[in-house]
Image 1 (cartoon, helix red, strand yellow):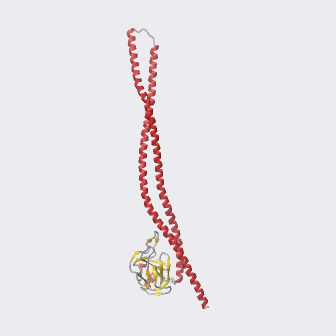
Image 2 (tube, helix red, strand yellow; image 1 turned 120 degrees about the vertical axis):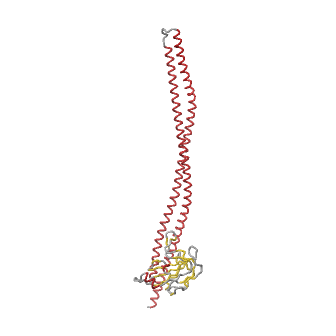
Length: 363
């Protein structure tokens, strides 16, 4: 019967170990994916700064194009007025010349049809002189109009030139409008593309973090099975019974409890910067319940201090204790290694009822 119990216990431990290893492997993959996504988000933010500078340049280009467009539009207005004035002037002079010619011809016809009457020679002579003077003045007026008419051909040429210029200016204006539209489209496309990519990465990270939390919960459940949880223990009672904790390694605290790391991920513990190879000591006396690697924390040692309180030591390069071993406060339990950032930072976390609390309150 004893052999059977030992046999089943062996199977149970093997299954338990495999389950933990599988979940740790999943967390490892998730952490890698989250790290990649966060790095990409950081790169996107850098790219957005560069693109923001490019957008400022594009805005300057657009402003310059707008100024050119305004000048062209003003010139188009002037040219259009010149064309309109030239056409009106040409039309007026042509109609005025025709009217004067008609009046002159009418006067000649009227003179030729007049009767001799009973006027004296002197009266007839004076009348002819007056008529000749009128005709002469009409001829002078028509000569002046004719001079203008001779310039009408030149006016027509100028009008045609102005029309060609107008067409060119309108083409330039349309080209400037197309340039503006392209610049604006380019600016909007740059931002839209990066925002879309960042949104996608953030969504993926959120999904990965949820999956990570689910797996961590499973690990917590497994750890919970290794510890005795008493429902009538509160934190004040636990702290009073446990007493003051020892700082597990000498150095400065460089990451505080709940400090933001990796964008939105908050630290569940603290990080103490020390020297590579320094001894890591038990902060409190207790029973070792876990000694193994955990993705993101290197080798991890977990100690059950009792009163529903567990200490988690991460970034250990070598352990000096084994599972189920009892240790005293300040007893060496391992050697400090490097964090994932390549720094000799000891990660220290304290959990009460499996929930992270601030380790500094224990020192």
